[in-house]
Length: 321
Image 1 (cartoon, rainbow, N blue to C red):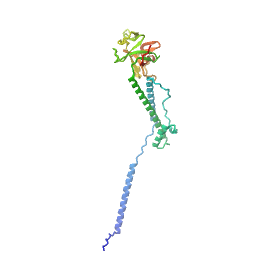
Image 2 (cartoon, rainbow, N blue to C red; image 1 turned 90 degrees about the horizontal axis):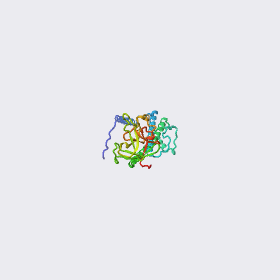
Image 3 (spheres, rainbow, N blue to C red; image 1 turned 60 degrees about the vertical axis):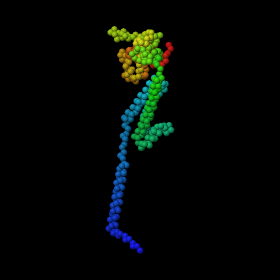
Image 4 (cartoon, helix red, strand yellow; image 1 turned 135 degrees about the horizontal axis):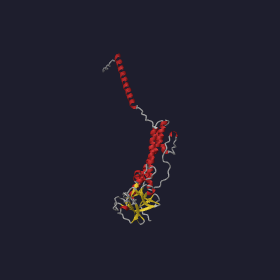
């Protein structure tokens, strides 16, 4: 028979030492776990940085800038549509007023777009019962609507510009000018690189009337004994500089004032608030301060003041007279 293996005898002192070592080990593990937990919590907790509240003067500046941009875009569109003879419907004031929506309740059926926008905003902004948050919500909604309006105006402007470029490609030569004063029309003949004369500027025009062409003579206007300029209809001669006229487009304040004659300084504009650009004036080829004038008294060449009887619209058809 085999002998039983003898088991080691553990004394009371050894048991005590083992117990102490076990407790120390557990305490050490707990301490490490506690430190790790604290470090983990420190990593998770981030300081909350509150955004500064929207100041009223800043909001006013943003609103005013948007409304100014909308007005400018509307003015540009109006000018372009007028030049293209596009019907312009009568509209009310297009400027939106900022309304604090703290007390406004949106109807999800009627105000779908605003409601959806506000709802998304609500999901990302805490505590809608905070007045400051409600003011910010109403302001952001207003800005969103204004931005969309600006984008729509820009799209319309781009479409008109594309239409203008397309019209230019398909555009025939100018064959007449229509007075913006009395709607009378004068026929012209164009001279340019393809149909040349001896003009110092291209394009230039002969102006038809009374079975001849208009001739402007200012040879002695600046002599020591000046003689006032004269104009009359003579036999047409495209190489006669006195019968050559040029057309200048007036598109802005600078081009407007540049053509005002020195004797008509009272006609110089300080701003363009009361003027609609996009018209043409017709000048003798050698004097851009004299303008063709057409009114009920007939045709003449006078110092430029750019009143309506000196403004013309180009036409691409010859009119029988």
